[in-house]
Length: 508
Image (cartoon, rainbow, N blue to C red; front, side, top):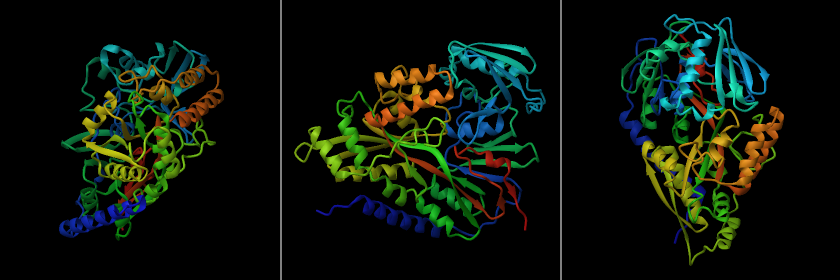
């Protein structure tokens, strides 16, 4: 029997992909002039699901809503909260006063942004009848009091030094709240871009207020088609969601620039800890040691990722730089499996769920091969995003792979790992129930300073690496491919689209 190791498996898939790409490109790519107008077009893998920031949870919606709406608070390079629409002062551990900036501007219909708009936005989210998915993260807000047009107070039901970092929802007009304006279809904010129209499903157009530049988002699900449209001038920019072969191909084309930047999106494998097999920590540790992260990062991700040991990057203010990523150690994996009672005469069989996204499916296929090398038989199951995500939230899995996108504040640990955060109350999808994790999270929440909180959250991450309710994989870099004549786009660490505020056409 011929055994294919992980690297060979990756190279085989690489060769097959390149052949398919060559056939597709040579048969489809023809000379095509760029569109004659001055619209800048960004090709995206998925369309925004909701342009009402009170309800949006998907990454594409969050990134576009950042352009349409302003927020009270944003973050610096170390992911510490900083003033955006408003500055703040803590009057008491459970009492914060926010003052809107004098130059805060107006909503896109001309109404000035007032403290009443901020209060209306957050009161709506806090009303359980409105079923906002952001309510649980803001439930500590006991009361909001408007003092004048530019000043309002937030009263909490418990102290939390992280509180300002929670106020990142885009502010909507109080009139839109009162009149039940359909913001998900006709967004109205005060951000640097205003909504123009949806010319057709999958196409969204915004106008940059500073200079009138039109930006169009085009949903193009297939990555190869996305690349073809870039080469033919039908789109001007692509960001992320492209396999290594396509990026390498683009990098060799005249008139295309490919740029990379460090990212914080955290890829992982999750386990169902209520499953009689996956609940065994030795099995989880064996799987962790069987995965050759460096080979996947090199051959599948074009070296555009960094191995991870925890959900937060080590340079985050609450990150743990002392943690070491799990080593690739197949012999150790076999020993752990044997200690759990599995071997050639009793092979371990697991079901592994993923989405149908080509890159995610390819990574899962290679992980399946690597686990086979240590004697684990993996039944790979891929589903469209809605079905897959529904199964994960409902606990219908043994193991799965996903990524946390755009994490800013360490309250993610309560949301994802506290025993009280089982879906739908939170995102503890693996059903972890660990008293030490609960204690450390609660101690962090009750700490008086950010420094004290950081120490507790570092301990949380160290304990998670030990009990391993998930296998940390890597932090994925961001990449942008741009046509000649497009300049000024800068990649953000969290993958947002803020670079569209500076991007321009350059005429030669």
